[in-house]
Image 1 (tube, helix red, strand yellow):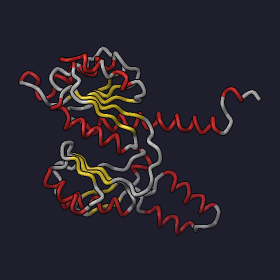
Image 2 (tube, one colour):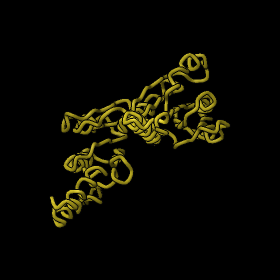
Image 3 (cartoon, helix red, strand yellow):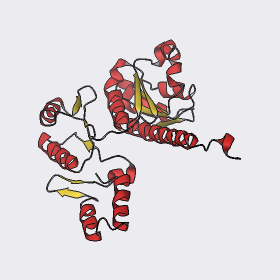
Image 4 (tube, one colour):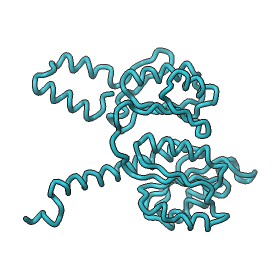
Length: 274
């Protein structure tokens, strides 16, 4: 995979005469995207631009199509995540990629990278209002973990029994981002927004009775939240919620790690005037 570190390494090799420009061009040529005839155009530069490889949306794709895309990604060293994976497809993917992790509840299939990702960067807490919201929450959890974040899942702490949430407020003290997954009237994100000092990514679910309108009611509730640290993604979009939270937490964790390294080299504020 040609990520930023490897691209910089290649350019340094060219500068130092260890690799000639023609060979470097040959290595880079495939990188922007690769056409899998009749199936997909694989974006190999996604991680270089956005920090994370292209994610496969599995809904509507056949097992053979997903297998072909995964095989091509793995050839180039990409870690791979597939969302909305049907059980029969998940079984086929698991048979072909024994190293992969199929989450039946969250409908995800993930093949972790072969290289060590280093320490976890940032913390995400995924919270559900009810147990019925767990499938969407699991999609968010797996996605945030794919960002190499520390992720904790708290289930069934909705506002109908708010003491359950209040008893766990200590869980949010060191969170960099929260994913609040809720159906019914969708009040949980506003409550969390008023109790915490980090971004809350609200994910409305299609869980609820008739006037719930398959997720439209909680979506509108969340969009009208009076808590200013709440942002909202689409109905049942656990992937988007987990991705946004992972992006925020990963940046925060990376900044802390860089600060610690800076201080360990003797550049703490107390020494800056020496």
